[in-house]
Image (cartoon, rainbow, N blue to C red; front, side):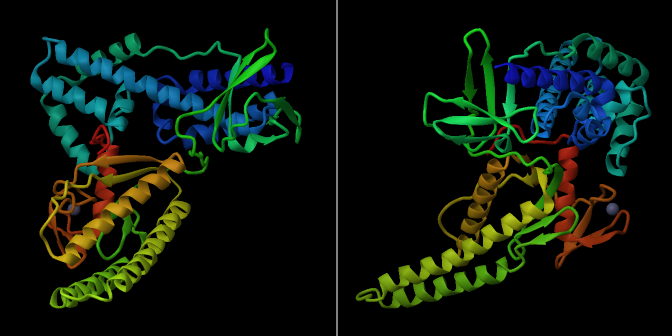
Length: 416
Ligand SMILES: [Zn+2]
């Protein structure tokens, strides 16, 4: 118990350090997606000073970061409500304030009394909104409200900590937990035979000399500490996924899909001509299944390759439109169905790895220029901007727009 209490105490120490160092307005720039914080904490050397194993140290940082983000979300919601109710604001004032609350970079700049500098496209939007208001007055208001409503985080809870999968193993009707001594684990007998492969929380009851293991709802979830990138993707019929940096995954999807659709179409044609006696129906089903399996195997391999190479912490994509059933050509229908399959597999794989999926609306997204925000047009897989003249791969442009919408906070709340 003493060894475990030591870990809980240090775990709280790390969390309180992260709260104090990054929980305020000065930390806002580093908490999304969080590797700045992680790097700074590594560089601080505190881990060796406190002698906490890295499996606990980084988990405590992630834990604290999650709390900080949550805290900011509460603060923003609170202020949004206040703005709506405040009669001293004109509609332009409210527009401007809502923009600041939505766009993280702008929010951060105002709170830290810096000049607002945003990517070219939204900078224009910002300047238009700013031109219609007394920005200094509104900035003061925002800073005042944040000071008033953004509570300081601190934990006094020194009897609880989280354990990543790497820090424990099961055996002899109990669990072995990593402790502060190198390469040593302590054994705790368990009352049940349940075995999990995920991050667990340990709650200590020192008086009663016992502990409780708390298991999160998504038991399959693993957290990959180096999966921190925010990746925008565009899906396609011929190339499965294109990222905002132009990487392509599933480039043969179109070819395989066409083969599969053509085969089904031919089979259906001959089936319709020979409806009376169809001896080959069972053979047909077996062959169809084989083709499907091959296609799905390919899709899954390419999705895995996407995740291991891009290491996303957040995957940003366009919400799928509701598709009507019935009608349409077979090959169109089959393509639609594959799209649903790809999406389901991607969601599953992301959940398994604790990767967040964020959706944006897809209206006009392929016509927007990811460079200047102007309007352009796509032609044979290439995007031409009529405002700034840039020429880009069309899917890369779309994926970059997806990511940009997420950065601007144009996120659909609630999952489809
Ligand atoms: Zn442009």
